[in-house]
Length: 225
Image: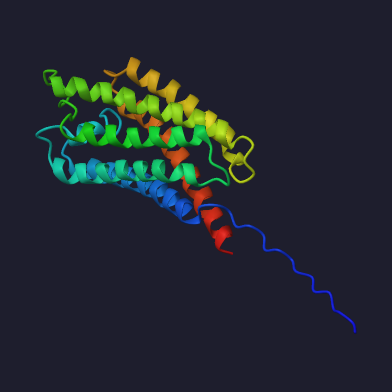
């Protein structure tokens, strides 16, 4: 009586957290689209607004034209950042403490951004400084620091990760760019080209979100295949 050996090849494990990667990708790319789209539309419909000299936050200053509608767009950006933060810790094969902390920092960044819309909007340009406007400035600083810390922590978490290692140097560069450009912008806040200076900072974190979103969705597609 003969027996036939049956060779069974075990299925390769699929990458962990495909749905979380999709959520992270949608949150990141959705945030970028909402921010850029709202800024462009706001610049087109708000009388006298200049992308060269005016801050983005001035689009939602009290009394501004279309303030409520534009605030919805920027709120969508902050929700997207928070969604990315919630999903981020579950996008790697193994749980990572730095990545978990980075995720919660992004949630805090999104929360701070919502508070900067209401009840602490930026004071209108040239107007008297109000307590709400002062809190807005503080929250802007907190938001920037949470982003810088998140870029550093993700770099630590991703350096040896086979799927995300391509972004660890990019994360360091993005964090450094936020620090440098944000500092320059703060030093020249009364400059006639402050709007341009501010947009270099925005380019730094928006490009970081874009890279995360692309990698997250690509890895989710591989997991499905």
